[in-house]
Image (cartoon, rainbow, N blue to C red):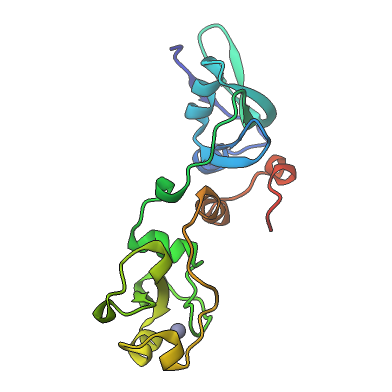
Length: 189
Ligand SMILES: [Zn+2]
């Protein structure tokens, strides 16, 4: 691997480098898949796994060459979506799937103010799986108690489902600064 030094042009202040110079990776079908660091982006390119569609206005310098940093990459080979077990089942990912929104009162909360609610209560045999748990604020969770949404008269915002990749990518995108060069490739919201 060549040794690379980061060089910034005047248009992209150095302070921004680590956060703003990530690359968006698209599937061979142009569907957004994930966000990677600029280092990973160059590795994928050195390995000839990707085609570069857009560049940042910043380059890195090796001993002999300058490399413009890729901003949008497309995989040369189509990869199938990770499904079902593709997204790890854990408390935080349930909140991400539900966009940090209580599925009963439909208000947004900080992670610390959310709880996991079993739609069919655990006491009635409700399993802890993607399709039986939702994000609920403390108040709604207490009000619902050991009842189904029907019994409690608290309808769900939407039925819980198994997330695919995209909700996770979407969450990543919401928390990143989006370079202008990505906009054409992100069709959701
Ligand atoms: Zn609530």
